Image 1 (cartoon, rainbow, N blue to C red):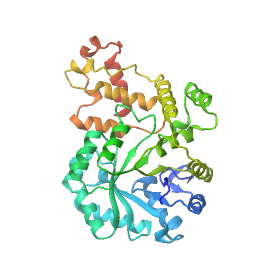
Image 2: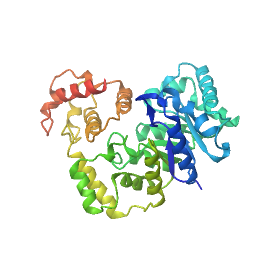
Image 3: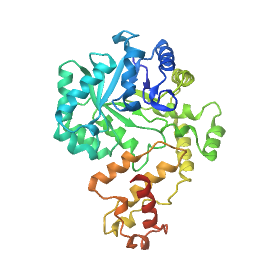
Image 4: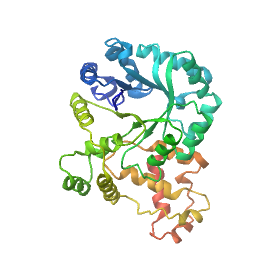
Length: 369
């Protein structure tokens, strides 16, 4: 039975602060410990560590362990494709770099409304189906950072998809832009196994505001912020694996200890986390309640509450992990940017929170555009 802690090869230790110079010796040590404890799921991608993530798979894994002893996932970077021939070239390059004849799981990377024309025009779904038929892929899937409606459209049109990789954590669970819960429910509706990414929200859920941390401590001092994140995700049904971008041997040991001592969340635990999310949200930059009055009077049709929700999510925590892809997905739906505001101030007259919406849109635009 597959253990649910997956090793994400995207935040590995590096040399001289250069993302492409991975510290191979440290990674070998991490992988050896991880494998020795019965774990064997590895996740990489063409673009991780500027291409070096796949490149070291052969050295740290394939040449040191029997192929059948580990599960390897990689992804096709549809955002970097220009023509149909690119897919074959990149796929063969990935097999060679990783030193394997097949991938256990192979995903279309970041299937989103922004890239819909691209992956449709060159038919990326057909490509991965063909590779599965050739035996070079065992299971096919997608990673997605888009709306539940878009995800459902993809799964309806492509029932052959077996797994969906989604951003899920307790902070994003009911977020109105990221929609983690709704996306998860769509995947479950179509009986697709879920791979969880960003369970720690880029590590930012390990550095909570003091009031939120106090709430967790007062409730149960034995659980660390890291453990709350993993317990939330491990408690979900229909999960194939929960990825962790581990950066040191100490992190590997800690993650494994949490996995092996896991206790499913109970009702009171969920109530606590909801209150913690509210406390974190008290720090939001723009006091928008998503009433949508403003959008009724915006002549440009700008998605004002959604832009503000995303910006708030970006700044709720000490978070260096950009949510820019979500901004691009929002924009791609109708090609309307925050910077399209003409400062007519019609929205301001109807805002119950008296937000200077044009000024806030300038801030959002400056950050994401």
